[in-house]
Image (cartoon, rainbow, N blue to C red; front, side):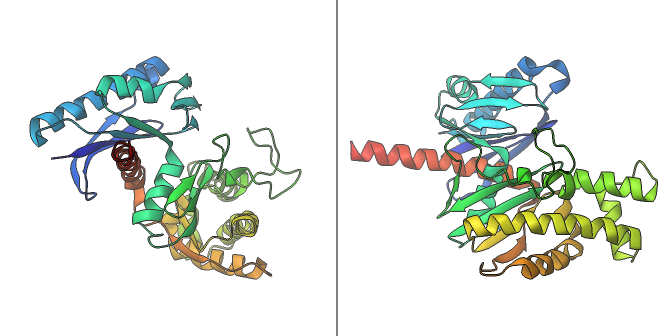
Length: 313
């Protein structure tokens, strides 16, 4: 059975699947990255994991994978196939595409984790059917993916979609990126967790606790939550003005609060728009499988391009 390898590499763990031509998940597996052993060990672990997946395909599906798609965090040079930098994994300029291609004896496409997840959400998830979409992931930080006619825009240098570093509070909280007042310092799950822990006096409190307190009517929680909503709406207004998406898909840990997030967010964005067209603002549909499913799409897209080229020549 013809299939591809889909691999989603996170800061601490890896999710993988063998994906059929119709998008069916034929096999799924997980493994720790082993980052505590250093960046070289992480890379070797990825290569070994991919080789095991290839071997599974040979044994159980009758042939090796035709291609592989790999989503990784940090800065990714998709054109050159480099995992350029990831703070959590400690690597720099790893030629991961070529290393995997040699180990698998198959073509490999490398993608940025959020853009890859956004590809899946836009094509087969919450944005299915939308010709223009913006995917925003509210996690430890905030990142985005700009969807155009079934693909995701990487930008000239691989930085497209970094909405978390739109400055929404000039002169505000310093950001590790070197700016001050970035969106992710106010509206990420990590930012809400920090703000709520301070407000309630419990250092272990997090964003999910804040959302529950908001739902129960706690005024301090409402103040913290609304501050994050206002910052997020300010950042999104800039994005809507520049990109004019038809659908805005919001995912990540903070989106798990459901309508506690989406109802005030829709209202806050609507209050801010003037000439801009208000997009549909919807929750992500694929959860933590988005990166893996998107990696599978990268691999099948690569095969489609290769097949088309062979036919043309």
